[in-house]
Amino acid sequence: MTSTQDGEGRKNSRRLSHLLTRTPKRSSVIAGEIRSWIITEGLEPGDSLPVEKEMITAFGASRATIREALKELEVQGLVRMKTGPNGGPIVTGSSVLESIQAVQNFCYFEKVTIDDIYELRSTIEVQLMYSVVGHIDEETFDRLDAQIELSSIPAHDERSRRRQREAEFEFHTIIASCVPNRLLLLMIEVIVGILVNATARESAAHELHGEWSRENSRYHADIVAALRREDAETAARLMREHMEIAHRHLKLMYGDLSLEAIALTAPERN
Amino acid sequence: MTSTQDGEGRKNSRRLSHLLTRTPKRSSVIAGEIRSWIITEGLEPGDSLPVEKEMITAFGASRATIREALKELEVQGLVRMKTGPNGGPIVTGSSVLESIQAVQNFCYFEKVTIDDIYELRSTIEVQLMYSVVGHIDEETFDRLDAQIELSSIPAHDERSRRRQREAEFEFHTIIASCVPNRLLLLMIEVIVGILVNATARESAAHELHGEWSRENSRYHADIVAALRREDAETAARLMREHMEIAHRHLKLMYGDLSLEAIALTAPERN
DNA sequence: GCGTATTTGTACGTATGTATG
DNA sequence: TCATACATACGTACAAATACG
Image (cartoon, rainbow over all chains, first blue to last red; front, side, top):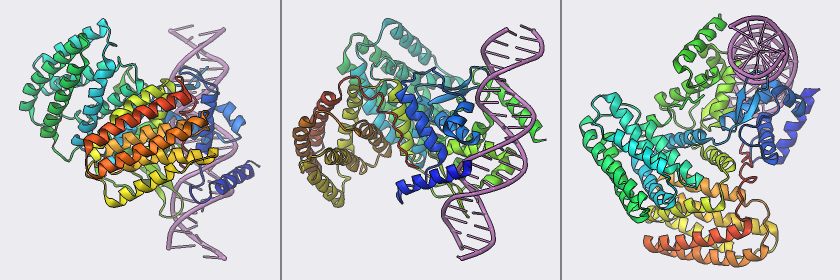
């Protein structure tokens, strides 16, 4: 009974899609329907969807199929599963981590280099200076000052060096978080996220790090100063230089043929 | 037997992740292991992974769990399932569509506007001019000419207007496909992909379209001419103007509060 | 704090469609 | 054409997590 329904559905969709696209999986179709259902209902993050049992009757599919559809949406970062009473799939906005993951996968297979990343990063970070100016409040400026303070303390062991490098990256995401353009923020987070993961392993070239770190702190301080007086041009110029230097240093540390084995390390944010 | 092993594993990971992160699902853990296995083995697109049955014994998990793990990797665009003999999960590179999907989801929930998209698009497309110059071969120039030709034919019905708009977008992806920096190409494809989906529905403001389309064709032709003589500066200037005009027109057509309900339409590339 | 109910997570068995050779 | 290997789908059962009385 159910099998005939299934068979018919598949044959039908196969006919429609002809030769071009393979017969879509039932779970993917259901996932798409749930997706558009989320849109048409205008669901916001936090809202909950019907539980598995209801979906089974609604779509006339087995639990495994429904679960697979929900899994697809979960991996895409659209929903999150919650156990217990009043549980079920709940809408979760953003999907920043999923974007980072997807782009990281791309970088792995396409053999993206440090040069490639910095060509893009430089462009976007410079644009950020123009877009963010005038949108940073006092509290954020204080946080930026603290971050710079943290970066200027000389690091001696590998662990503190890593924390310092993370703080240096965080400086950029803090600024980006102030920009009204959320898409610009996402791009910064994606690129910085890739770099954080790429440089997460302990690095060679310890002796380089100290000097570079001091130079970074100077640039960060100067950029903040320029942003304080809302001087976008200067901030942009400094950022461009800052990116060029970072690019040079990272290239010295990691060489040309990097980002391959480093890109795919799972975020594990479950 | 398997249940005790399972229980211990879960307890172990729960202890490690403490309170910060929720107890990860077993399928996600396995997905991560497969992911890093792909890296360490240095698998390329087209290579095949062990079939489900082998994974069941290798990980000591049930079929459902393995399938869920593979589903995760499939949605992330890392593998593709193949039925039949010599089938099983095979590695598939790229994951361009997955990146587009993820960013689209983000745009939906974060209420990204036309202004936001064009601020970023303008920056990246202008950068593209500098990066792509000297990397376009004759055959591609011919394709670009053909594309411009196609765009300059006046469109009368809604269907041909849509095809024309798609051709106009394709012009940009053709140029982008020549850039050595694959990450830059990805970004262009993501942004253009979002715009294509956003403008896929039939639009109001038909009367605007004709004039705009002619202007587009002129700019496209001028940009190609500049790229032919490897004049990056002129190409960049033209592209910036072209973007400003496109931004103005799209804003007239769709207004300020767009991209919400349009962003989440599933690509359905299965 | 403690059971209890609800809902997801995991597991096993089986049937069927589908592509390869 | 037929057999074979594999994913896809269904059904059932139990374990684990969480909210609520």
